Length: 223
Image 1 (cartoon, rainbow, N blue to C red):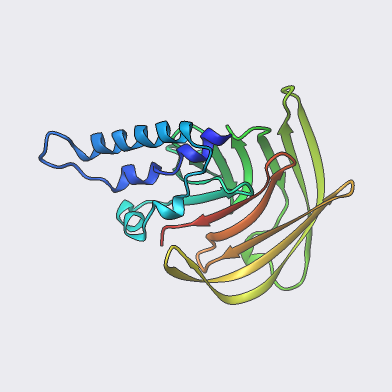
Image 2: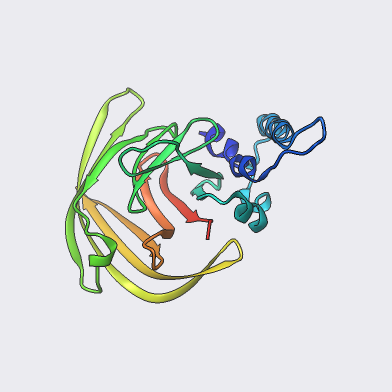
């Protein structure tokens, strides 16, 4: 798990580098930087914080979607879109780990441990959710250490709690609406929060992944 988000930190820099006329191209320097980062992470128990390494200028220069993910432990990193199409939008880390979302809602993960193998939900589209509570169901499927799949069936409700709120992400302000979701299953209650812009992009969220990882925090960094 430590390898997963630590190694993701520099994935966006690949997109922001350009070739030079020198013998050492931008890509070669990036690969060397990645190797140095990996070697350093093996020797240190401290997490590499993407906030201290990734600048707004690099994000803008990349000209591609970028997703920041942070665990409750403080481990964090950046992911970029997985090439090709599938169900929902899949985000890829440099080590091959992935997170899949649909409407910005967590749908599946791979390479994170006790992965969310898949989920389905009858949650309405963001445009259909108003200040009145909407009720629906959600099914999640996880894999445990014994490689066995277990399924949870949640009763959920969601409502819009704020409109025209301003949040700042990597020095850029976004005008968003806030949505709060509550789901319960056999005494387990989870609470997720989403901040949605006028293009229905989930700019910021706090979402429950599972009992092992707990909640994950996400931010969309591109404008």
